[in-house]
Length: 140
Image (cartoon, rainbow, N blue to C red; front, top):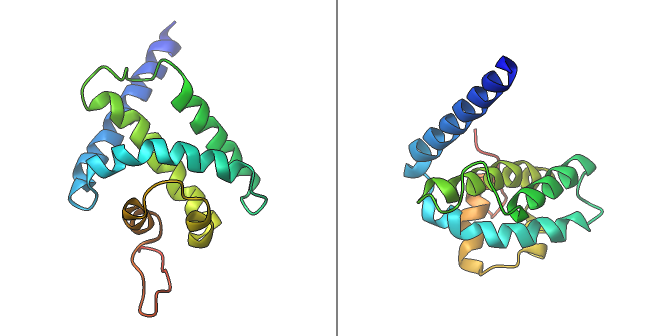
């Protein structure tokens, strides 16, 4: 029983750290944009599952993220203002950043289901800023 309490405590602590990181990073990222990206990212994950250019471990991470997003209950229920949507956004952000760095910007543009206006902040988040000549470089 004590291992269960420790596990729950660790999960709550990790979630709190992720929320703090998101709030601290909100100077760089607009949290509202991240929240608007979640439904489009779910569709993107589904499309990337069928693409042979995506590594297997990122397909597995995408599939698990889709399952979590589809579940009727979350770590933090969605009816709790802001925090309810942040757990979805944090999960999507973590999986998306790794997946897109692995797959590349061309694959993102090919499968992106949302408006083009949301694609630019997503590319900045995943790949950094474009170098002269439009070549993407990773953030340091």
